Length: 174
Image 1 (cartoon, rainbow, N blue to C red):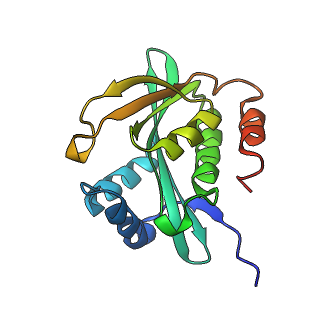
Image 2 (image 1 turned 45 degrees about the horizontal axis):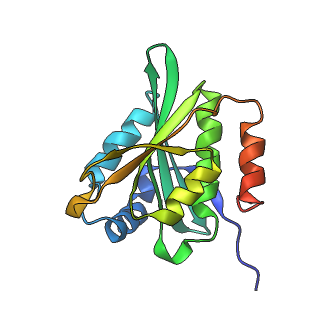
C-alpha cells in the first residue's frame, strides 16, 4: 500500500490539538495553547509564519518563523521545528525548513537564525544542510539546564540558495 504524501500548509487553530500533543511529547516545558494562539494571531499582522506537515489528517510536525527588521536588514528566526517521534528521519523537518526558507526569502529576509539543543546532533546536521553554522552557545537555555547552540545562515538571499539546499538534501524534501 502506498503512503499518502506529506502536505505542508498554514497552521490554523483547528490544528492545535494535534500540535499540542506533539509539543508536549517533545518538551518538558512546552508552549501552552495560549502561546500558540498568540503566535497565530500575529500571523495575520505579519512577522510570523507557522506551518504544519500532515499525512492525511495526521499532523506529523510543525514549524514557525519570526521575521524582524534589524537595523534595516530583514532577518528571520526559526521559532520551532518539531516532528513527532514516529515521523522523524523521513524528511518532514527538511520539508518544513524548505517552506520556511522560501517564505523568509519572499519577505526579503537576508539571513536567518535558530537555537537548537546541544545534544540534538541530527537536528544540527539538518540545519547545516540549510547553510547554518554554529555562532555561539546560550547556557542553560532549555529545561534541565541544557545549552542551546545558536546557529546562523547568512546566505538566505543568495540567488541559488534554494537550489543548493535541495541539492544538499538529495531530494528528501519531496
